[in-house]
Amino acid sequence: MKHSAENRGIKGFDGGDAVDLISLLTEECDVLIPAALGGVINK
Picture 1 (tube, one colour):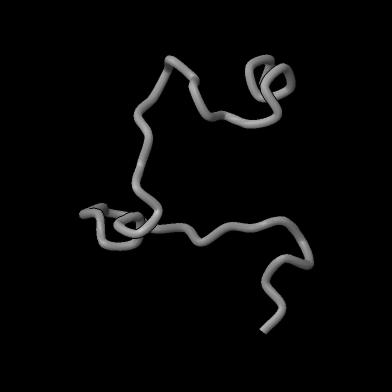
Picture 2: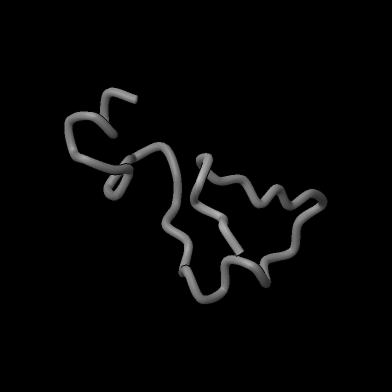
């Protein structure tokens, strides 16, 4: 949370790896949760 507040996002955070947005939905996983803030998904 501190990194996000200081850098206006999570880009550059040392605790994880960047994911290509194009391949995000094609990654192998056991559970996919399409979560969003209220009002973001409207169609």
